[in-house]
Image (tube, rainbow, N blue to C red; front, top):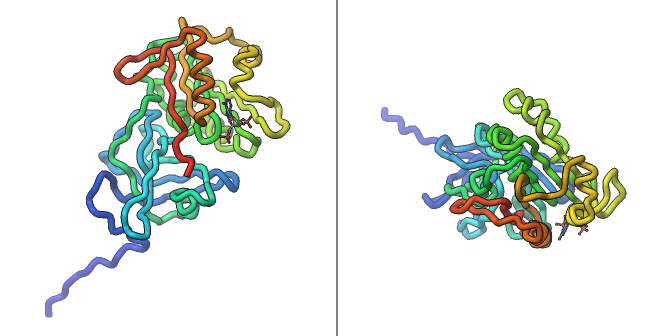
Length: 275
Ligand code: A2P
């Protein structure tokens, strides 16, 4: 008798045609607030990225076609899996569905990471500011776990501003874990400063980071001199408004915008996913 072995169809299988993405498995999901969640997926052996880059992530639509959005990779390049930090938009085409994923489900992962929020786009400096709001902290979650960040800078200042303190939890837990990390904990304990503020409830520090830069309050609180293009470098990631305002602050102080092709003093990237 001839036996024909047929592999059972995987649960929740996505019939992805070969395309500019691979099909990955969700390893874990954590919900921080009713608007924010983190998920971790498998990483193909061949997937390489630079800390701070973003990639397309998605799910197939009803008609089987992929629905993809740009997400910053939040995990370090040396990690075996990939982390992402996302907003949940109730009527957002992707996140209204993505927020319900659970371990074992499948998601689509783009093949080509890109972005300007990378160390290569900055000239050497002394102090690196990473200025973020909301889910804009995601690329910095990767960069603060890259040993090169600490090789290149004497001081690394991560600022994170949200409306409410519950939205700061992901960053607070992350920085604690980074300082305890076997690989980079030693550098992070010496060089990484985490500055948080909230804007719509009372907290230890209340206010927009832009106002605190303009007034000098940020530098007083950190015990450092005001922004200076001779020694400081700036990475910005958050809402359109934040990008525009911090970019203007940098330009007013004679900082030059950098890119992969022409490294300079500051770089900007929108926190993409809003749908
Ligand atoms: P605010 O509450 O004063 O608007 P959002 O959820 O709208 O993306 O905002 C996230 C955080 O970013 C909020 O604390 C918000 O402050 C702050 N924010 C929004 N726009 C700007 C901006 N142009 N400059 C600085 N901070 C901003």
